[in-house]
Length: 392
Image (cartoon, rainbow, N blue to C red):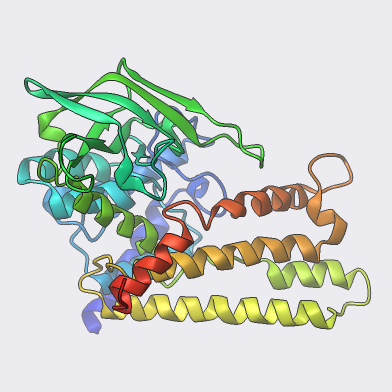
């Protein structure tokens, strides 16, 4: 305990001295992408300082760019960051998805080559999984990779490639064994996005954004050394990566520290305070149910951390977290809009504040939450089979 307290004091002092003003409070978080302008030079400074400390990926081994922190030390670091309003140094799929997967399935050469790059936040990552004919039935994917000497040539199309147009790297599932059973003929590759033969085209969304892309491959090149795991055995690797995605491990480790979906009670006070200050019975019940369920989710997150080993991502239980958290997210945005009344459904115009307009966009975007990262229907099947052990 004394050692932990000493770590907290040292961490607090280092953060206070090294976290610049432009990386505190709300605002842009570095994604690692060289294609997205930074709103403040402090964001790059903050990333560089945290990377040098090993705190971009603090639980990774020092040999791979981390700091070798234990789970309890990681929790303490996040708590100290939250206390001074420090933003994460970087948020991307490299640190949360590709990196942890390479740690588990990559060979030593791949780990030493790829993980320090990820730990320095050098490059943003996107995911090449879904295809126009392979969504929930992902194993039906048809994008092919054919061996050509020391490389593979990739041809096909992916869909819903989040941030594909601003990413430098992709982790991709491709068919390398066309005659194998569909789950067995798939391999997992790391792919450089900045090359001829890769074309990421943004898709306009109903909320006005366009971070989703459809991505086309025409003889795109992946080196044999960038195949993670065994040939034709990428399905296992790809499934494990999805567990990292669904877990939101940083949120699990911190118990949701710094990521609480705030606003429900404040919005209720703001908008009903302009009238008689009282919520009607329906709203009182809905707000109470949401707050209780959100708190229960946080307690469950903390229990999962207590039961984990050195911060390792849980397995099939991540499907439970995905279902509950995305459905709560949808309830959250619905309540925010409803509590604002007609002010909660504006799209543009002088009669709405920026918060009100943003609320509309969040409400529209939240419709996708129960679909992306594996639809909640699929997650319930996983829970039934892998967690509860129910028969097919």
